[in-house]
Image (cartoon, rainbow, N blue to C red; front, side, top):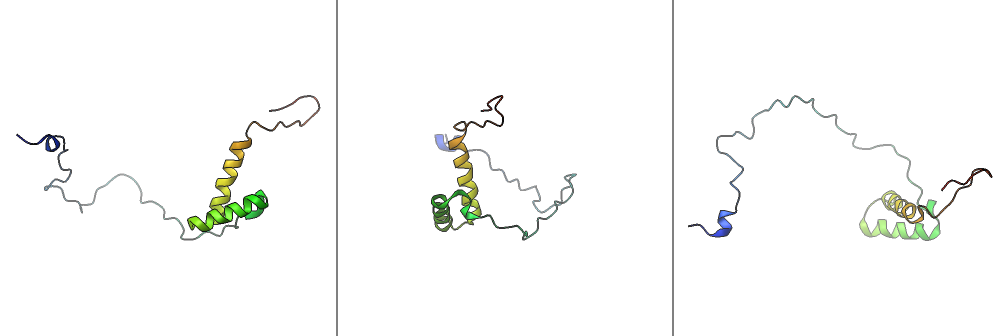
Length: 97
C-alpha cells in the first residue's frame, strides 16, 4: 500500500501521446502587439503638496518604480481617506454629500 502522501498526489498532467508543439486552431485572431513605448506626459509629482511629494518620491526611489506609480497610489489612498469627509454646496438651495 502506498504512503498517504503518495495517494493524495494528482496524476501527472503531461501525457506522452500529446505533442506540445502541435499547432492548435483556437478560433481567435493573433493578438495585436502593444507598442514598446508610449509618448505620455509625465505625471507631476508635486500635485499632492510638499509632504506627499517627498513621500511619493521616496517610495518611488525605494521600490525602483516611476514616480507616477507612487503618486497614483497616494492619490487613491488620499481619496479613500477623505471620502465622505467633505461636503460640497454647489448652490444655496441644497447640500450634496
